[in-house]
Length: 174
Ligand SMILES: Cc1cc2nc3c(=O)[nH]c(=O)nc-3n(C[C@H](O)[C@H](O)[C@H](O)COP(=O)(O)O)c2cc1C
Image (cartoon, rainbow, N blue to C red; front, top):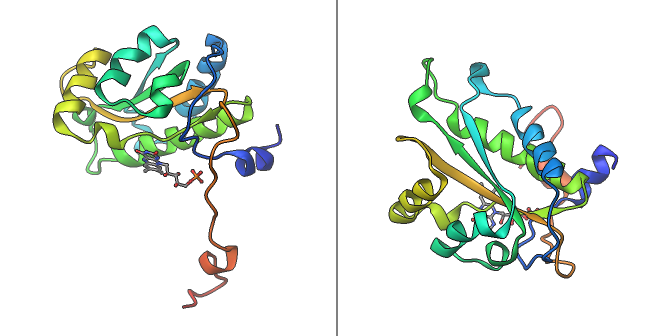
């Protein structure tokens, strides 16, 4: 799929998924797209856990069920290691966000839908439980989970504000 078509097609799929499995090679392609993202100081703190089937995804779903997580055939969990900070600045948030955005586009490009799902894991107890399920080493953060699969239905869409309300030339215009 052409890059700009991919960008245009990507949307947050907040509804149910079809049960069709996602081949591991596609999940790996999506993961590779995430790891190819730029990282501050080339620090590469982002770690991914591929959850390739319902069995591996279900425990994470059980602690925070949503329509997507309850039906998705696969997911990729995005974690960061804050203790690995080597420089004056910590780019942990920027790094995982860049990786997640690239994975959403990669999933779209392969014909899947996905969703940036983080709020279910904001709760401290749920975050702790999720990290335990994922076997994450001490100190890691679970930043976002991207369910991946084919959509069950067309899925809801949100409108983007007009280009000229958000983009200016030479000077910010109010
Ligand atoms: C930082 C961030 C956090 C998000 N967290 C959630 C979430 O927890 N649950 C959810 O349903 N959508 C979440 N989303 C998806 C947004 O709701 C969605 O991107 C936004 O409404 C625009 O819609 P679109 O992605 O279809 O263009 C998140 C997106 C971002 C970038």
